[in-house]
Amino acid sequence: MTLPLDHIVIAVQQLDRAIADYRALGFQVLIGGRHNGRTSHNALVVFQDGSYLELIAWEGPAPQERWYTTLQSAGEGLVDFALLPGDTTEVLNAARSRGLLSLEGPFDGARLRPDGAQLRWQTARHASPDLPFLCGDISPRALRVSESPADRLHPNGALGVARLDIAVLDLPTSLARYQALLGPDLAAGPVLLREGVQQISLTLGSTELRLLSPASEQADGAQAQALKHRLATRGEGPCALVLRSDLTTARHAEGPDEFSHGVALSWASHDAQP
Image (cartoon, helix red, strand yellow):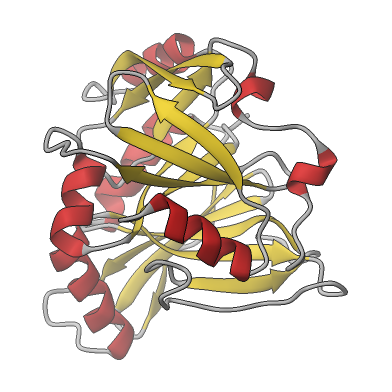
């Protein structure tokens, strides 16, 4: 069984402003807290399926952190995403046994909530950002991600992540890495070619991951040019987000714009499947 989506990371300049803007877009936004030993603090948008958006900002320089350097060089937006392992070390060792030797970890992480609760987790990361990182809980996940139905109810009708697009430099290379990370049960669709972009869809529970790469250096379609620009400015990683929604209550705003803080955001019906 493949790993479920845990969360998607959005780097922002000012956390308070991002919280206000996402609330204006109709999201319920929860204050997360401060990360131990780092200058970062965060807020969460938690969905009914248990996945969430993490808004993260820094109160001091952190040049050793890739998310921070991307924010400084390329501006706000999507910078990473995580999958949820039952046991980080077990999944890490299994991926290495399938040939993903450059997956590093486990690394300890922690955050102090505003109410004084201390939570802990472990991560594992690949050397290149085309792959997600693993984020497995040591303390109960309910401390990290609220299970309260009220905290997961959004005025805009958001229910969860329908699709996450991932920009990659070389589709076959990245697909092989995903297969090594997630194992033989990973469901992958056919490779498609549209407007100079190669793409393949991977299924993680109710979420579709769509890997996108330019078909060639000469590909000149509009989508290919946009993807090349994205890769040149922000590198590999998540580049667009589609949320599943309850259309009966939805109050949608689409991005990218100043309110979504650089996130290309669109919506799908709640019954849409990958």
